[in-house]
Amino acid sequence: MDQIIFLGTANAIPAIGRENTHLLIRHNQESILVDCASNPIVHLQRGGVNPEQINHLILTHFHPDHVSGAPLFLMDLWLLGRKRPLFIYGLEHTLSRLQAMMELYDWRTWPGFFPLEYRVIPEVEKAKVLTLDGLEIVASPVKHLLPTIGIRISFNHSQKVAAYSSDTEPCEEVVRLAKDADVLIHEAAGRSIGHTSSRQAGEVAQKAGVKRLYLIHYPANLTKDELIQDARTAFEGEVFVCEDFMGIDLTEE
Image (cartoon, rainbow, N blue to C red):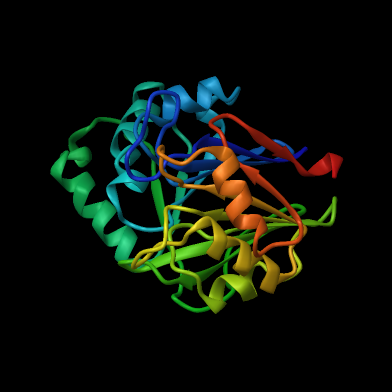
């Protein structure tokens, strides 16, 4: 089973039925959380995933809508009795701030807390993040308001590739990261410093030569039809708008 599930799809301002953007990668028995918004335990359960199955957490950058749920997630796993390590991946900028945030909660005083293994991702293109049986994830820096990574997920058994831009302006780093991918998940918060419009996301997808474009992290005041039509002015492939708990099953592609 090779899946990507959208646990949240909103930009920094959530709405009823739309949580801040975070994703779940499912590969065989592994479940990998990408970013950690709001109340991850509830969203994982609604997505049909036992939170205790999460062994890997990738944080794309240190903005509240992407990391605010991390302390609660870690505390809840501890309260659920977790003993095995949790591996947390991110740039040094991100991980150092997460560690400082956890110190504010005095987490070291929580008895019997499970091990946290922090893995710093180098700020270079196609940096190795995680390799599991039949799954490879690499990361590249993108252009946001602070250090941020996008990721490329290669499902080797099904020979499918998905890329996720995270929050970014249109940039060649994402074009290279998504080159010839089956799926590009690209933010569509709107044309501004550090962000991308749906049309610009279409331009990136066209340059990268991807098959399908999924728009995420978009504002509530735009309709799906508006987002799709805008992206299609620049992209010849299929365009979809992500919704919370929607999934992409790459084993069936």
